[in-house]
Image 1 (cartoon, rainbow, N blue to C red):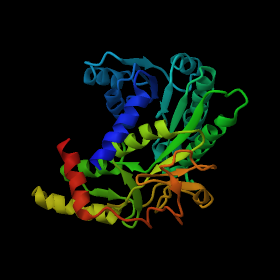
Image 2 (cartoon, helix red, strand yellow; image 1 turned 135 degrees about the horizontal axis):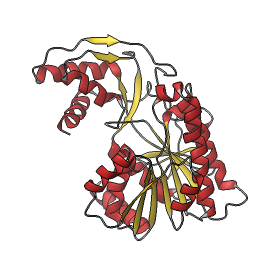
Image 3 (cartoon, helix red, strand yellow; image 1 turned 90 degrees about the vertical axis):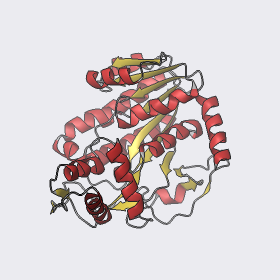
Image 4 (cartoon, rainbow, N blue to C red; image 1 turned 135 degrees about the vertical axis):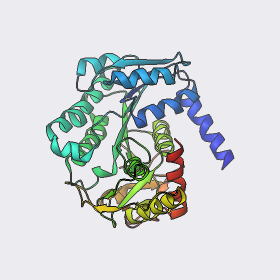
Length: 341
């Protein structure tokens, strides 16, 4: 394992060394962690594009010792700004999006403007400026979507796949990575429930039988930057991951409450929110016929990857209610790690 890790580090270093990299939404949970990882590989320049000046200020303090990180305010809805910041860029990691399911349900027009029209701006600017590769961050909610956010992310995936075949595209490769829920990211369930537990409030649970795919921020970032190396254009990369059942998470929170000598929390079942499913999927039925894999990830591709580390996959489905579950020991470790942060 250690030998393989050294090999991957060397491959990533060779790929990103001296390159210019743009990260949209670079002050967010995923974008900022991509920056943390990429600085290890000596890029010439990392450009962070985001519209939140407060987050940029805080991030500048965090990375104040790095002289190769540049912060630019801007919105991906603004094509002129996107085109400007894409000039001279080798790689783009497209993290900017509206990601909260209820918010997108309540504001579908805004979700379209950011997740679709903003993505189209990224594509057109990347082609114009001859960017080498663009990696789009997607989600399991794009598979058989039942909510606005999932629909916009599915269509964004389609935009990025089809961008490889645009008549004016002679240089740029577009691919996507498809995430499960990212542990500890802003707006995710564990920070919410931990805050409720520590403040002795009822734990608000949608449905105890609900399952969700989970990955750590570190795993999400590794998947993304490795996809930046492997991408040949048109693929969707998916991490192999376990799922979490909400009833197991509740049981672990009760155990943690006892360990911390807190009163046992009250459980408040609030029901599914509009657009939510009881389980998530990471590949649709028709995609399963075009899947390849290695030890860490699956790749959905219309053609066999030229990289021989990927072999044909014969997976029959990839649903959160049909994969191995994270056990209570692992959940407690995750909760305690989050509590220490």
